[in-house]
Image (cartoon, rainbow, N blue to C red):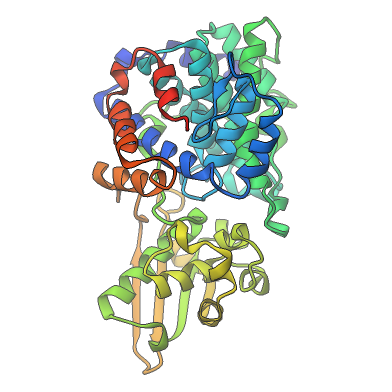
Length: 458
């Protein structure tokens, strides 16, 4: 049996009753995080044209609810909107070893599929676990740095196949059907990193398109449409086409031991993951030593090589962001607002701060470099190191191995709920947000996911 078919069989066999309690709890934790980001993401400027596009394609009677709106549309369009919204804030979950964001693809597809199928909360959880496993294992097997170097965004590419498997689980496809869904998805997996050139919205669209494509793949497979049964390992398959250093042995290595949901990180800062550890270090130094912006002469930030081209160079570009997307991928901007505002959460990534003279002045004092000393255990660890030199000549240095939000340095349930409410209360009243939290925490008792999805409408 080939690799693709083995994956399909394993995903087919995955059953809620065999999932450990900690995995079930983690799925709910990740789902609540996703929902908060998706709800608030529906308010972003990139979601507005998506909603206008959808408003011309409404299906008020048979359509799937689009979270945080009053729209109801055909399921693939709903998945497109959800994924695009959830990826628009740079606050979505991430798996360090694969350097991708699984929730925005997998959960956007599984929720829309779940609404169509009227699945239970337990079945939803099965789809999420399977979708994360496929998405992340493929990302690891590709070799993230090599995949990025070819110009691909792994959230978009790997997420398409993960979304297809997640939806296929919800639709109760057999191993042949799941294989076909992956095969069809493999011909749709795309996502260009060229958004970095001018901060275009296409990065956000990648997540929506992967959920949309994955859902279509599962729906077609359910109707008997076929896809290549060797889409992962074949001569012209996913691994060979998307990376020059892919390793097929990594796809099944350690499958479910533990499940990838247990190795997924949460973002406390609204920017690229490669900035997060450094921002933690900056905040720690400034807080512990009571530093003001006027005290600081220079900030030296060590950036992991895999992320250097994303957040640190070209320096003149990173010092002059032209959009919120540019700012989310600028370490100097993230560091500057952290120092000035005391955080790098969503409210700091604005055009007002981008044009602020105080922010710009501080950005110039932030210098990024590669540091071989933090590379040794990457990607098992995502170390960060920052030194702040004051105008008086004092030097304060902090290093950490795991950014806040990593499984080794996790946010608590209370912190996840706080993050959710901070985001969602901009759209929904507090009592509705509390009801959503209650539904997610009791997901295993939800008889029909339609009930949850109806809660999420405006």
